Length: 105
Image 1: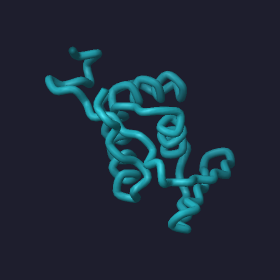
Image 2: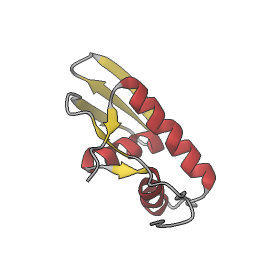
Image 3: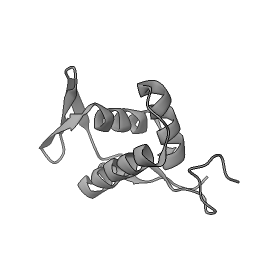
């Protein structure tokens, strides 16, 4: 079943933080730095990127629920442009190996 306008005919995949990833964060006003202890990788993120990862660190999310949650928290419109930006962030985290598909329930 569709939960809203961003959902399509198929269920949206959910993502979780890779259990092998060990992130340490430092944040300032508009940016954050994350250090991944296993790979030694360090990356700088803007506020939205950091918020996306913080949500995933709290538990599995799909694109629709994450878009709605972040739009409410950051006072942004939950529109297709925000969903596209969040999808790009998810893709980047997947490419880094920091996120992986959640097991179906």
